[in-house]
Length: 625
Image (cartoon, rainbow, N blue to C red; front, side):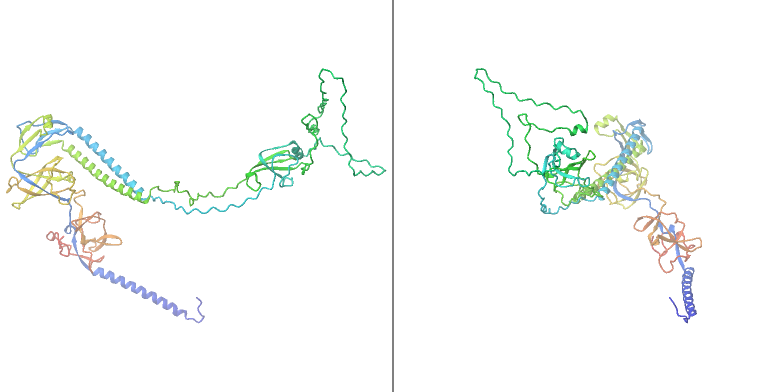
C-alpha cells in the first residue's frame, strides 16, 4: 500500500503498539486470574482405598439339602486305571485320608489329547473367521446387460470385376493395371494354380523368340516399284501327283509312306545363345506343321519388365488380396507378398455389449450373486457360532482332564467306615460303586454347580448356605466335586450361567450345624474365582472424568495439590466401579471429586489428615461407595 508523503506514519506506529500492549495485558490478566484462582482454591480429597473395592469373582446361586448320613461312593471309570488301593473293607477313615491312587500316565495322555483337540477347534474357528471375512469382501456377480442387437448395416455393394481372370498367363495376357516398371508393375488377376507360359517368360526377360522371321529390308532401285494390284492373287495350290496306273491284280496295294521329317541338328552352342535358337514349332494331329493362328488383340511389349500376379477373394480385384507374387525380368528374381494388416498400438478388451447371453463370460470377480453371498455369509456365521461352542467345550474338557490329573489321588471326604469294597468288573457289570465310605458325624450339603464353574470352584472352597426354615446362615467347605454330570439336575439357574449346560454334584461339610435337621432345604451361594488379579483396584465411577485426552482423575501430587492424571480403565462391576488398569493409581493415593467450581488442576488438597478408617466406604460427597 502506498501512503501519501504527508501521511502521519508516527501515529500508525503508536496505534499498533498500543493494541499489542492491550492484548498482552489481557492475556496476562487472564493467566494470573486463573493461576490465582487455582492457587487459592481448595478441594476435598479422599483416599483411593475408601472409594474403591476389590473383585473376587462372580457369584452363582444354587440350592441343596442338608443330610446327616453322608456316604462317599466311588464308581469305576473306564478312562482311569487304578494303580493302588490304600484301604480295605471295615477300615475307619477320616477326612483327608488316602483311599486310592489312579495311574497318572493315562491321565497325562488324556490331558495332552484334550490340548490337541482344543488347538484343532481353535484353528477351525480361525479359518472360518477368515473365510467369513473373505466372503464379506467379495463383490457379487452382476449379470452383464445385453442390449438389443443393432440391425445389421446394409452391405456396401462390391463393384463387378473388370479384369480378366487368368489360369494361364501368356505373352498375350493383358494386365488390368500397371506400366511394367518397378514402381508400377504390370498386375494380372489370376487363380492360385495359374501357370506362366514360355512365351510370357521370354517377354518378361526381354528374349527374342527364335521363331520370329525377320522382315527383309528392301533394297532401293532406280526404277520405281510397281504398285501392287488391288486384285488379290490366288494362293498357289499344291501340285497333286496322280497315282500311277496299274493293272489290277489280286495283291493289295500298299499305301504311300509319308516322307520323314529330317531331325534338326543339335545346337552347337549353349547357354543364352541356344535359348534364343529354340524352336517352338507345333505339329498338327497328322504330324505336319500347324497352320498360322489368328493375330491376337494384345501382345505384351518386349521386356524386361516387372509383373505382379494377384489372387483376390471371389476372383475380384476390388476385394481383399489373398496372396500374390512379383517377378522382375531385369533382375531375374521373384518376390512373394501378402497383404499386410497393421496391428493396433494398444490391445483392447473384448466388448461384451453384444455378447451372446448363452455364453458364460469371466467378469474378473465372484460368480456368486448377492443373494447367494448373503446366504453363504449367514451360513458361515452360524458355523462360527457352532465352532465357538466347540472351542468352549474343548476348553471345558481340557480343564476337566487337568482336574482328573490333579485329583489322581482320591481322599476320604467323610469321617466314617469303609462299608464295602468290591472288584471293578463286578461293579462295572452292576453299575454300582466299588468303594463305599459311610459317615455318621456332622451335616453335609449336597447340591449341583454348572459346568462353567469347573476349574473356578475347587475342593476346599467355602460356600454360604441359608436355611429356608430357621433363617440362619451356615458356612460349609466343599469336600467333593463329582467327575460325572448329573442325569437330573437340581441346579438353580440364577441368570449368570448357561441353563442348557451340564451340572455336576458337589458336597460341602458344615462344621457348625446348630439348628439344622436332616433333609432341610438350603440356598447356597458359590463364589467363582476371578480370572483377574484379586488386588486390582475398582474405583467408584463418580471420581473418574474424561476429556479429549481420555479418562482422568484429580490426583494429589507431592506439592499437596491435585493434578489431572490420565488413567487406563477396564471392566465395570456392580454398575458402580470401574477397573483401573494403569499403575498411576494405588490404594494409598488421594483423589478429588472432579466436578464443581473448586475441582480445578492445581487446587490445594484438603482433608488428607481427616481421612481415617472410620469413614471407610464414604466418598467426599457423603455417598455410599
